[in-house]
Image 1 (cartoon, rainbow, N blue to C red):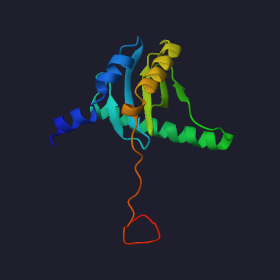
Image 2: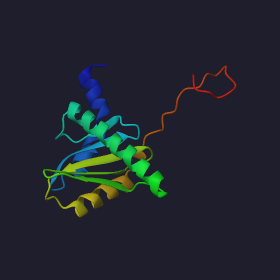
Image 3: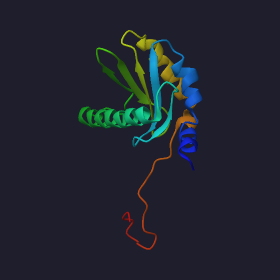
Image 4: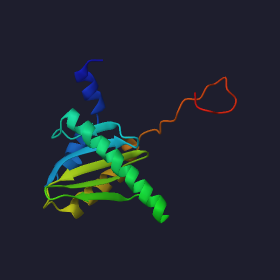
Length: 147
């Protein structure tokens, strides 16, 4: 598989992000990320390299939210918001073991963007979901310890 083919394959849902999130006023870019931080798709306003970096940051935000959830005894993460002077980042669950992360302009309508993110996640839960990756086990071992 060539680099161009791999990039196209890894962005198979990019059109969905462009149409439902990227078209909202104030949105700079968006990524769809597996729960363990692998980039699944991105809006066309973001290069592959930048999208992979944003995916890694999204995974770190998820880890922080999970630690906060554990500390507070809450049930699940709904959304993580990071507000800087020049931008706002929103991250939300988007299907099984997947996250949708959006970077906006600082004056964007966060309520509208959050609504669009949630609506997209609800409407397309199966397409946005990712199978959870688990360590392979040694089939000859009977103790179930990962190989």
